Image (tube, rainbow, N blue to C red; front, side):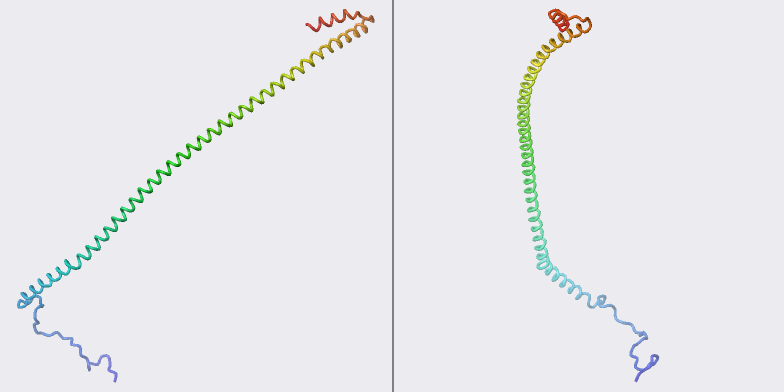
Length: 185
């Protein structure tokens, strides 16, 4: 059967405080104090031996192994850094050498091209000078021929003008000498 909440039947909890005096806390009992000190000393010695002989060597071994690993890794890293530095120096030296070679090749090519251009320029100047000399000869020949024709044309024109103006045919020697004097200056 169900019991009600406020029902006191079947309650086993004791809520009243007893009025009697209890025994003191066991570590503070004077009768067991000496044996507790001996037990403490034995436990401390046993714990010390366990820690010093088993736990600390293991921990020390792990720490030592870890330190060796770290030292090895640092040494390997230092070695690799040295190799990388050496490789960088070698790369920079190769790069400087390649630049120097490229500049030398560029300068050599520039000199060759300048020499070739100079040779072509001289050849062209010689050809042009020859053509110019030929042209000057042709001009001189043409001028001489033209001047000869100019003299004849001037003589004919002067004779025609005198004949038209004066109505008389002039002497050809007189006209030629007058034209020659006029052409000379």
